[in-house]
Image 1 (cartoon, rainbow, N blue to C red):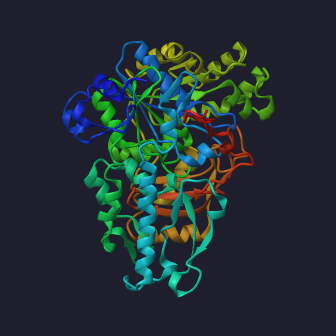
Image 2: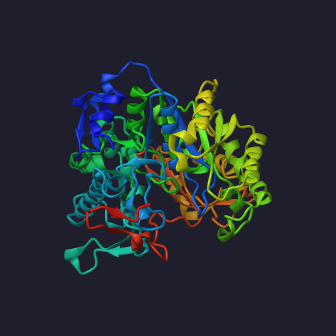
Image 3: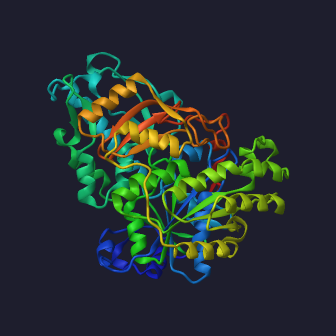
Amino acid sequence: MQPISQIADALGLAESRIIPYGKYKAKISLEALADKDGGPKGKLVVVTGITPTPAGEGKTTTAVGLVQGMGKLGYRAAVTLREPTLGPIFGIKGGGTGGGKARVLPEDEINIHFTGDAHAVASAHNLLAALVDNAVYRGQIPDLDATGIQWSRVTDASDRALRDIVSGIGGSNNSPLRETRFDIVSASEIMAILALSSDLDDLRERLSQIVVATTRGGAPVNVASLNIVGSLLSLLRHSIMPNLVQTQEGQPALIHAGPFGNIAHGCNSIIADRMALSYADYVVTEAGFGSDLGFEKFMHIKARQSGLLPSAVVLVASARALKWHGGVARRNLEQPDAKAVAAGGPNLAHHIAIIRGFGLPVVVAINRFGPDTQDELDAVQNAALDAGVAAAVEASGFAEGGEGMTALAEAVVGATETASTVEYVYPLEDSAEDKVLALARQIYAAEDVSWAPEARRRLRYFESQGWGNLPICMAKTHLSISHDPSMRGRPSGYTFPITDIRASVGAGFLYALAGRIETLPGLPSRPRALDMDVSSDGEITGLE
């Protein structure tokens, strides 16, 4: 690793604009954006994927490797990523910093605590919960009792025991007694706000608009009315600054904010992207999970709010993922089966259609794994080309680093030269029901939508408050295009069920829940935490 001052200098950042956190990571002052105001801007490339499988597809590895490949070609490139969250690290996924020879460093620090942003978000979220409970206990908000509180608490651990709880038990000293829940930190509206804010003033305004409760008369209670936005801002004033680290080959990596793609909008911060675009020729960012989740939300929420439009999109696919969607069991994914790859082709074609539906050029990155045969790789490429992509290129970043990504880098740079006009799936002025129906039909390949009675009642209330023109942030499984993780490939002709809907007014979207989606993950039968340790020289093991 190079000292972080050298990474900043190579990017063009003045020394006075970075705040080092040790030798290899730093915060970037927001003043660095003003230094480049009005200057040339780089091109933005979004990396997304087909429907994820239990085997993993390697989007982060591809994003990092692509930037390293661009570096090999002589371009000034940077990668912008979300911050890993502790729940998946100690649960199912392990580390979230790429893999093999396409990683961001220092991966142990990035994965564990980093610069404290997630802790700050959790502290602000839970402080707000405590202040709201206290205001109800003290009777400080007229016509509000515990049944009207909507603000839950958060934890950064996967813990199914906290999904539905009763708090305030033990008598009047411990009230207000109420049913509530915990969410994962990455699902916090404050995390979404951090990722979508443009500066401190915007962060303050968004925090003030958070709706935490509803009075018995139906009036919303927001943070501004409680006069506590200053205390929340005091916990987040450093967290709004993006974090600078480096790829394994020395390119700058800006890692900032960590909303999940299946239960939030799944993209890193607007500030990090703008910062990188002000200093680099090409910026590669990742949208969480498949194009039906993170990428769709990138376009309808992040791009619409920020004006950050991609010049090209990279769709990550693999032979083993298509075999999964072609019906192969996980234990057999390493066995050669080009016919199963072809059978999984409709899933790839659907994701290509989603991206092309936004009017953007698509390059498919065929992420190579050791057991892949040439017949399988050819089957992936043929399925991609038949679906109308600009190019479908093998990617070997894990095994070869930047050297194995130069062909993909050349294809992506070429795709960014293609003129495009962005089109959205729905206009904001449509009703929320029409927006959900448009997403269900065009993104999730459903025939119709069903609404649970309570979800429809909530929606009517949101519309009465003037929130119906907000975009939709769909919370659904990442393991299927549909709401049902057992439906592989490209399901169609089904009814898409909305079981609940919430309003994230500060973040600027309505948050619909489809099927049995949980906002606090549980631990698997064998958590990754069991494989982690610290060596005698202080190094974390088991993160890979």
